[in-house]
Picture (tube, rainbow, N blue to C red):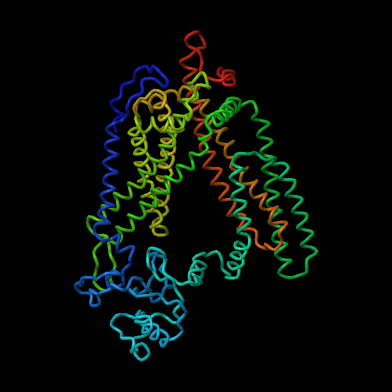
Length: 600
């Protein structure tokens, strides 16, 4: 990949000078690859698959809303469906879990039944009144009530009231109880349906609390709460609920009160143990985390001078969501671009279409990694600009925007190459994971162990390469060198500071993990308080799980940027320490707080 031929020479670090384009061949390769994905998207639209997906088609290969050509071997194909724009399923609640589709005959109809049809007489009257035939095309409406084939060629009774989906023109039941039952069956750890109904009722009743706590978790990602006080309040809430349970009337209400009190007891015990362990770790490790604390303090200053760093996860998330939606749309178009087969028509991807899907799948990983790498390069460029600008008052007005412009002008090829390396490792790991899941219960213990070991090794390799890539992007942002040269230079710096790297990665990661736990704990604690004073919410578990998962996602997104800033600052600090000695003409760039720690 272009790294083998690089020669090792002494690096003359010149921060923010001599900017030039890097890894141009990889820029060309990535551009050609993206053009290939666009051609696949255009092919899926040009072959009629897009129209077939949006308009829908029946079980005989007829696209709704247009005149169709006869398909050899399909008796009911070639229908004129100009006035029939909606897809109607004879049994919409018959869902195939393994195939992830509705397992039912599909017809093109003029309109969806707005009311429930209880008998075949109702189906016949609906057909005559609305000119919308809900039975197969070879069955006349006059035969709906007399033909023995009505049970197989007409919808399953009663026919639920349905409504067309926006854009996709599918008649779907207004009452989604059948899907609720399907979901209930899929959740295998709920053996009693009443439990699921109770939990669902609790979620719906407390949806306002859930939304409020999710919004509050956004603020908690930037603030610190006192864990000791929260633990004490939890014990107080537990005692309060225990008294309530003892004074309640025997029955369901008392059982629920006791369950809530037990859950609070467990949560309070866990919080107490966590608080004690945290205090002990802070006491014994206070002398070992001096440099990490200094870097964290400096990272805080970076966010003060470059507040737009906080929004980086948001923009990256929007970019990824937009790409994933486009990617999924093209995949769905390809899924209906295949050839029809005899019997009930299903479009299957044969021949070249299969290679297109594989190409498209590789594109999903490469482009996703490219977008994530763009965030890393953008953050690195902004932090490098901050660190190597002696007079902070002379910083660009928007360092983030300046970093994005430098990335787009000079370093897209470098980012594409780094993302491709991660893709090369991720693809075999995903394939092995898929094989392991497919062969679960069939292979012997030795094969299962070998596959798991390979997956684990590839995962570790991916994490190591991701860390090296991030530092390579930092070196590129400093010296404007290509990916391989930057990776080599960054690796040398990291090896020379191996002990510091180990201390920062272990202690720093632990502190950031504590930050995530703190945000989740504070959100859950606030949820307990809110639900404690609204006793009509009898089921607490699911609402708290929802808000805790959201809080962890928010904390992970924002603290990951903070972690990237710390890693970039450390590499800049290590380079500054190695190539400057504080003498005239070789002054340090670092802040005074870091200057104190440079000799440790």
